[in-house]
Image 1 (cartoon, rainbow, N blue to C red):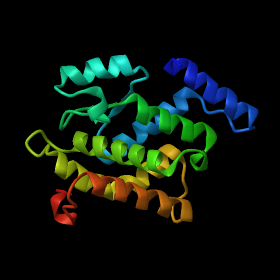
Image 2 (image 1 turned 90 degrees about the vertical axis):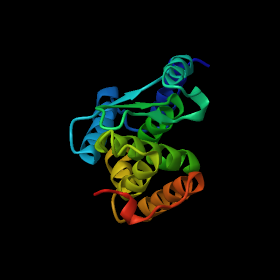
Image 3 (image 1 turned 180 degrees about the horizontal axis):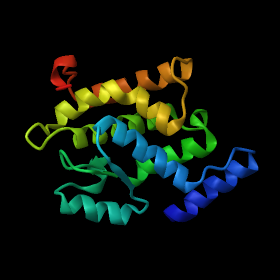
Length: 181
């Protein structure tokens, strides 16, 4: 199924289930607002909708599309996010977080936080491990701003715990001192 057709199918399902409609501009504003708040400067989140386009973009950066979930130059102003992560966030925004598998939400929250932290770090600081250490501090903010999960709720604790498990599974936990802020 083509990504645009899949998105329309998700929206159609959401409307059939009585879910509130979420405009694409609202969705984009939440992504940009979250990344900007974390980076401390204006950041645009660019969601790729086509795997073919994402694969070509990732290849230009020296990666394979299926090996990377997001690409941001350290100190840059654009977070480039893979189609899978964007689809997860969009689906959760339209249908609600309880309708999306927790592991997918965790991956999406961690990716968005990680990429926003790369935009914060200067090119000299821009080590992936530092961005991940900082990302762990901001996962609740991403979940709140982008997915509209209220702070201090069981849902927030569940999602942040899963995001931390996702990020810890990928690399060693560096602790608070690894994040320069």
